[in-house]
Length: 391
Image (cartoon, rainbow, N blue to C red):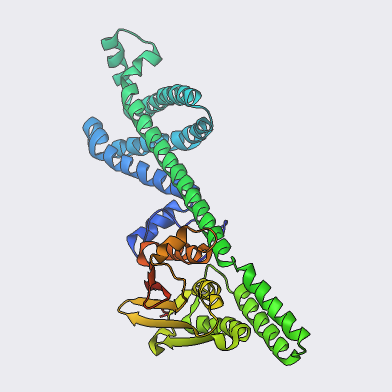
């Protein structure tokens, strides 16, 4: 899992492979101003084509004057929506619902009247004003505003459709932006949780190690004390330098665990035997850093530390198809018959819960975590996670 910077550029709302048509759609949607002008120009070009095929041809046939009328009508609509409607609607979007509705309805009516008047003047200029006299006679009025009333429904429908599309796109983008922020916040929370889990190094380990070093110093075993300090320093450096949100190879993980276990073997001497059974073909697999350390620490604290001799820890890793299976087993005498009960114990189950939760955050339901009792005594912690490599 990688972090996502707050100022990451928006790439658009569509999942797209490089070179696909959706990549162009993402390019359009990634910038609101660019998206507006592309859709605005495309929409009015479509209106122009429709106007030529229907209105102009019906009114004046296919002539240069009818073509000019289609150009003028499309240009009037383009300028009205670009210069008037867009800033008015943008202002309205920042208001409450009641005021927004009032502004949109009022301004749309006034713009429809203005468009009707401009189109009437253009039609009269191109085709003469005889049609106006005929309409006045049929309506029984010479009032100019009343004469353009029959043209209002078409322009109201046109502007209403434009407004619906404008607000629909903007509210869609706003909703998507809110969803992206929510997802981003959730990811930040997950990352913070992962870091907390990853850096939850048991203070008992540090206390016991420093206590063992202090004992060696008192016994004037400076060489052994220096060796433990060097190993502790190397392990802590590895622990703190590795990003908990990144993964490391199993080979690196094994080297870190060997440092940790060397310290513990110094403490327990002959009371602890460690066996690594790691298949060669698993060493390049990527795993969460120090994912096995809590299981080993749990085995040492609640199994090996309770034994006077013969303590054993066995660490295995093997590939099972597309999965990596890892286990940490001990032969402690006090393992419960139902080890899963440990997960509910706030004192003894912290490290194991840590492992389970990290796997859940990183792999969701693609990973498995299991505790089981082994005969004649002991417990195994088993993990199965997707086998991932750099390639």
